[in-house]
Length: 424
Image 1 (cartoon, helix red, strand yellow):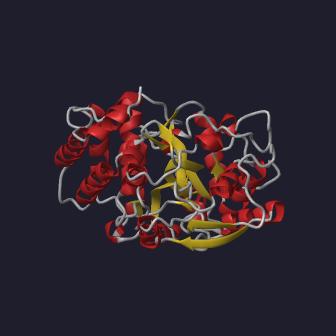
Image 2: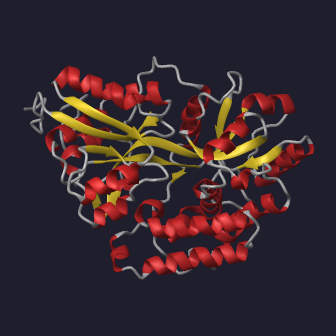
Image 3: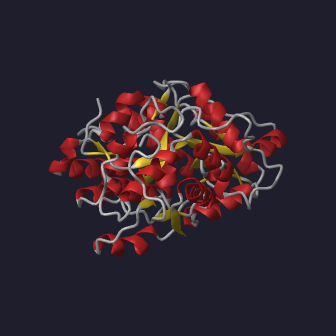
């Protein structure tokens, strides 16, 4: 029927697994309660950070859950699942009638470009549900006290870090044990300095993506300057994400790099008057993109395994995720936005950090960018992160980092499967 396009059966059960990380899993419990109320379908709910540990054996045995939020440090990589034929093509869900406007398809109500992150071999096999922005974060309270202003240039950023150091505060904190986070800064600087062409060169496995790229050289040298001048928060290289973030919440650093899940992840550790603020990456000299440009797009991939036992209910659950009601439930519980256009009821009051991401997104307008190599090529991404780990510990210099990053690109380019992915 129009209301139940996939024929989800009342009285059936749905097996839901949610990564219980920065966004928690209360939002999914709220969804499941509504699903049971409206459709009479009950759920078994698993909230965990051990995605690979809990789910790899189930995939191997042909007994996967029905719907999974496949995220976090122990995510089963989407490209790996796709290559082994484990993922459902989500076209059927995206082409179904939208809950809020049945005259339109689900995909018509989604923010343009946000589905791209779930592409593998030309098919959308993962729904990256959360509209995420990445960049720098600071405390509005600390900045007010110190008389600092949001830095628009890299020189102004370094000046604040140096002033912080003089006052016994770290300049930049990063989540050292997970170099993914410092790559937010490196890759943002590369994209803003060299423009979209510099970003696409990396995604398209260009033989001069890193070595021979002025933007890549400028980006990595800028971050290394922070290391060389002793402007990192002391000890940050050896800390987990939450350990570094908690010290930042204790005013032990002026800045930290992260995505927009930070506020929700740090709710318990953030002082009530901290006034969390998000900002775009400051500009290097002669940057191609303007200061308000931000890395923005979709994160948190939800997948439906091809061998799920209750496919009709899984598809219906995902269709309802893309309704205003469930999108607003998510914003309330997880303090973040979804990929649904105008997906949050305006009467919902957002926390300061989340509100600042909304304002930054508006200020950026069309000046947004998003790398796809992290989704397309997990092995290459891991190799670049490993190089960044060495760089931050001063075990290698920028020149060697560029060499290692380019080697990872060149290795990936030799994989015949890489030819299926290309950005124009």
